[in-house]
Image (cartoon, rainbow, N blue to C red):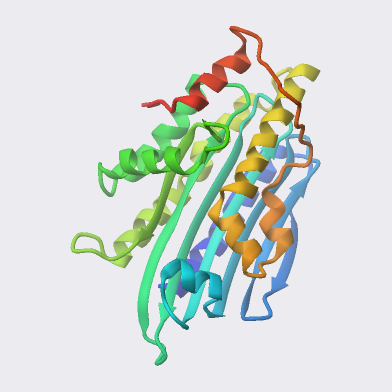
Length: 300
């Protein structure tokens, strides 16, 4: 399974990078290969200062070795060996009318002293963070997620949509990071789902990513905007940074386990503002967005 999924995310990285580079049209991703001293490594690809994408990263990694102490505590186990691989991406467009997007698909194995698999699971998802709310964009993104889920289980979309709303929640602000999508974790073999079934589900979601995001990016990337729109985008990006550094388990885990800092923090946008005691104009488009972030809604 680990070889099968790692081969898949290598191919998916190529596919997504080509789709995003074509949408930008002005620059390409820079590739950075790296090795982890404890075992494994990765392939980081980053785009900066494009005509459409101000900053974006599409990273894959496959790491293995002794389970770090922080993970032992997280999983309530003693010393063990592990393997983990995944693809993680964040795209920050330049135009405030175009939304930021995040996605991640990952696989994990844990072994006993004899090298036998004692635990394995999939996780992942994809979510959208707009700065200005276009209902048709939200509906399209969620419908694409639902279509992928429904081919495997009609209960998956409502379950993983709720888990996404719950997870990407800035508790200290009492608002969501964005308008959600899918979030699933610890997808293990059951009486009704084998690991191969989970593989087919996760890869179906991964394959849906460009269909979910590119039509939105292409609709919004050339819309006119003002300096005030850009300021609002940078203020909202500040909330994105707050979530990633305060609440996000993946970021915190990477920082606590000697992860590769450049890859972990590639999710942070290049231009951000924190404005003291910022207030919104009543009835504005900005206030419309915040109302949805404070009370997540069904989009389909």
